Image (cartoon, rainbow, N blue to C red):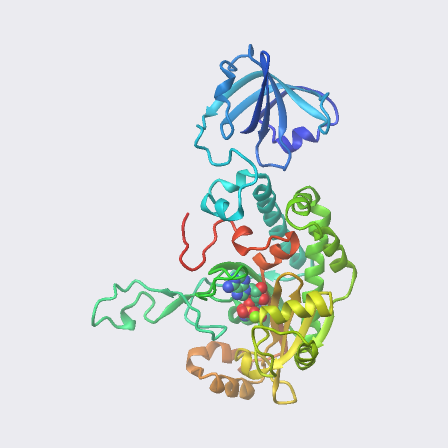
Length: 453
Ligand code: 4AD
Ligand code: MG
């Protein structure tokens, strides 16, 4: 039976017979034998294999080039070499798949841009192997966080007829051929449908039945913003809680980010060290800080005052009633507060229809969690649970009540205060690893003009 290299390297005593399979990272030849670094992706480290040219399958050793796949059977013995505990003395080796000199991952030090063009091979590199192991571990941590708190996981639909965020950044889903005279009623679903921009509205229906719920799935936005923080397809985590106000919503958001930072530090230490070494020297320190200190909380109006008084020249204007831009968010978290910051109570005009109107009549119970290096990682709100107020909001946003009849029903039948938020999973991963571009924390990125692989 094959053993994962991760488990082989964790051995506490020599093992007589070990069978491993993996890809050759490097080979160094000596007189009559070679050292092969074999990696199977189960962990960062490779296993050093010592192959005598005379063992079955070894001849000629030159076939075992970088990128080739191989099976090795041998004896696990303490390694005399520095920096590694074990090495595998091969008793048999077999070439599974050769790789010729055109294998693109021969040398170290490729740029992130180049590696995006070979996204099918980049997980074989140390950095991207670490990235996608961390991504998997963190996805598990997300579920653990909510399951431990009795949240119910809801699979909300990917195809939807409603535009939750009202931002119009929708991908159409259609079976129509685009021929003249075709009517929307002839379409597959009998009406226009889109890829979801958020599972929130459906999550609200379930929160108003099961109390605490969350979604975690792919989300789509046809935003034509070619930035390092926007993808057209990304994963969003959306908790929604019944009998909950903005205060408790902000508390959960903060607790969530802290729990993810703690999980990365404690459970992904080996992989995180790669990021500390090659991507972001301060990553571990930053995460420790995040775990230990309370986040800053500041109302939007106060944030605007701080920005106005900063004496900074920003590209985008700062004015009450305008959205905070990424440069403003980063100033607040990186320079002013030097801390993750939750901004709340935004002007109603710049937020979607479902947010709860505050008593001041001008702001809504919205909150965004901003973090250094990224800006907004969480966006959330207490929802408008009063039918009349919601109808008024929809009117102001030019939405037809009949399109949202079922959403309005939630206010007609046993309405309750409720709140929730959405976390961009990729932005969270960028924050946890220090990776500066969203294209490098998702296996196969979808951005304007790019849908390769
Ligand atoms: O702030 P947003 O638009 O909020 C919502 O969609 C709410 N319905 C969530 C809720 O309350 N249930 O998006 C939430 C988060 C953002 O804070 C950001 O982290 C991420 O989703 N996000 C993106 N991530 C990558 N690429 C994009 N184009 C993103 N747009 C939003
Ligand atoms: Mg937002």
